[in-house]
Length: 48
Image (cartoon, rainbow, N blue to C red; front, top):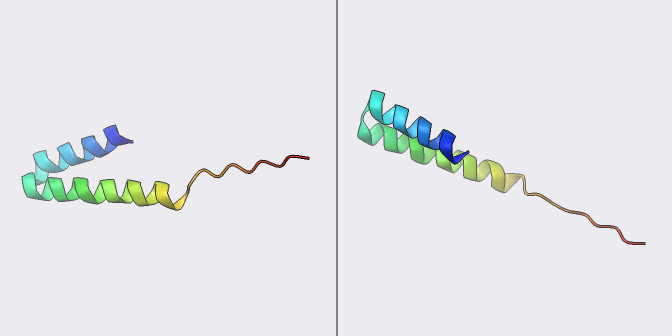
């Protein structure tokens, strides 16, 4: 996931400029963070 974020940031910096590329990278990183925060791994253990 981090490699994909890095590739998106690098591509944005190369084609759109440094500031826009960094903003795209920050936005992508926040989207990934929110995605995994909204879907936590929950382990339910039932013992009898």
